[in-house]
Image 1: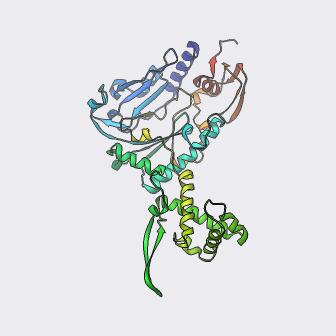
Image 2: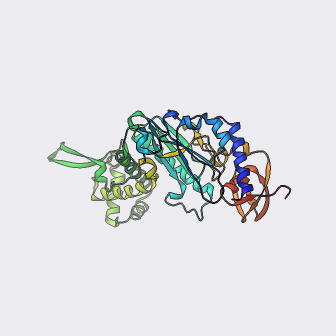
Length: 395
């Protein structure tokens, strides 16, 4: 980034901060604050170990310093401005989750567009929220678009704030499905006796009311519904698509799903003998891939982590780190809703290093190599990502 571009971005970031109102996080005075300024050269410098008192009034600080990135700590401390972590006196930390499109299975940053990557990341966010709300019952959630490639979720329920690193790692393992290797781990044992049964019989039944058992059960029942809607030949062929399910097993499963559907729906892993459990294990494998939340483990387990400030600008995109109300999440489009109003409604000239397509603010922009006159939000996006420099006036 050359000096003209850097100066332009810093100035326009300052204009943005003078126009907006940013709410600090709860207990702002107990947190460490950090930021990355616009500095010359290719490297970056993190300025940290600041308390809220050190930076002063937040909005005045942002308008004056015009930083490239802004962060606050998940941790709350006795002395957040102390120069070492030990001296800060840790008390508690928010439980923070980070989803980054670059790290999602099935996403290829080399071939997927920015919009496609963000769409995949939103799907992962829905999966994460299902764990946090349905499985853990967390209610005090703050959801934010990171301004870059993903989403953050802050959990501030009092019960989780004093958890240490190991307890937080257990939560990470759970939402990622680490250690769940067999449906037997997700089942309870029931004893069947009476009703003509000479000797008591034990059967395994999936726990269908929550957790990974619910996710496996939903897949198993959906498959049973699909098979029941087909004729026998097609139903058996569908079941034979699963590894390890042959002709005999598929026929046994088909009969169980059609004649004994209530037992399948109840989670009975013995409804078709060993074949039901085999199929349930295959559904578990699919659930671990499709329903897990591929969160960034170090972010969640780090009780001293710095995380982006909602309302601030992301220096690598020019987009806003946008807090999202839970009710508005389905309709949220980061490529529209995170575009700062400051960067709308007029054009600037930038010099692009290559031809590329940019989807932003509800439009597709075809950029050519060399000088382009573009909407400012597009120009800021290209410059912040290192794909363009600010063109000289009059070009």
